[in-house]
Length: 226
Image (cartoon, rainbow, N blue to C red; front, side, top):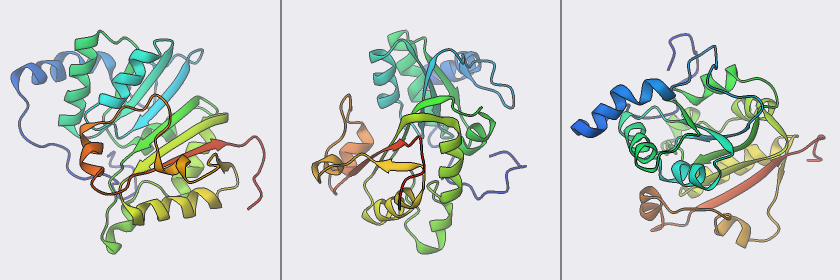
């Protein structure tokens, strides 16, 4: 995270095991071509539909969506080096041309985006920081939701998933309290089953031992009654 950012880091370690030569090569050569730099966002095309995934893990879900929607410009945020290398492998293997990457704290990127620039945002299985003394590190906060709402277009969608029951409750408390966010769920099936175009990732397969929660909110054009 940038040293100028006073917020506590919302993610854990930056790197795991050493990358294999092929992935290291992609990290060294392909990543610089796709990286979004701040404060300038030279890789963004305002005329395009832009979808953002925060914390894309190994990149399976993001690459899947990018293949389904070549007309959409995707931004993936992931500070974990090994996860970024995984996405680069998917991009290289499938020849994807519509993904840009910010491999640092997503809050810095969101703060730099113009108003009403995003049409969809995914936050899938963010670090739950389960210990009570670490809860303040969770990325879902009232302040961050304010930032997201600013950069999301009216009627756009914010989609979240977690395998932590405690974090699901935490998310809902803050999402439901926000005056510009409206929950799209109509029955319990809507938060127990993922939305269309979902692809199960390796991380989710581990989460299925519990009970994942899927939340889908829209940005309302007017203040919601709470």
